[in-house]
Image: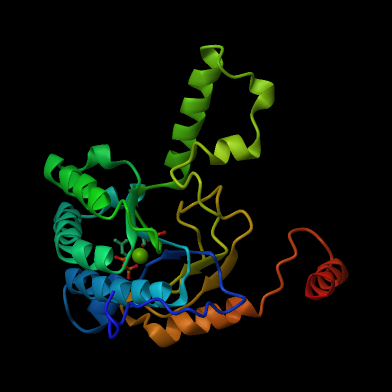
Length: 259
Ligand code: IPE
Ligand code: IPE
Ligand code: MG
């Protein structure tokens, strides 16, 4: 990495940072409409916002960033918009992959690729292979992803093992379910951001976000800049995560850890 590279990782990871940030990047269409532009212009501007957030995650040494780019339900959009989104995905992969590798970012595309054109599937495999040896930020892009799809696929795999006698159903645990999801091996999201003002999960990382801190902001995705992300991280750092315990228990555990 070069000295003046804006993506250069700092040696000083701040405490209170999430290990895994998941983002529903919503509001591109409205951003464009507000400017009298076609919705697609919002999606294009959204790619720029992705670059900025990835840069910040690299600098801060956040381990995993998962971005919701296209949901299982987004096929219901007008065919023209869907096809433009696929073109944009292809273009972004073409343009960004070398830069990601330079910055030691490992790219993973999660979701059901089989629905994509063969050319795009090939590009996805190629992009993942290009960055496979990178061990900095893990950037997961969720494309044709749905939390229910993820869980259904995991249940199918587990049921097949049980049916063949390789697995005793009594031995299925939360960990073994997590291990069959597309996010296997990664920590669950600590911080779950949704831009664009909606207050819903829209079928993103349902199992994995069981204890994620939610940060819902009216800022439209193309406007979600460095300052907006920094604000989300600041708010996260001030949250007390109790995981079912009482405030007193959490404080006592923190005091014990400090000693
Ligand atoms: C999110 O922005 C991007 C995708 C779902 C692909 P939208 O396109 O949903 O933007 P709004 O919600 O219509 O403003
Ligand atoms: C969620 O946004 C999916 C992505 C951001 C890719 P949508 O705009 O599709 O969500 P809904 O349909 O309004 O819930
Ligand atoms: Mg939307």
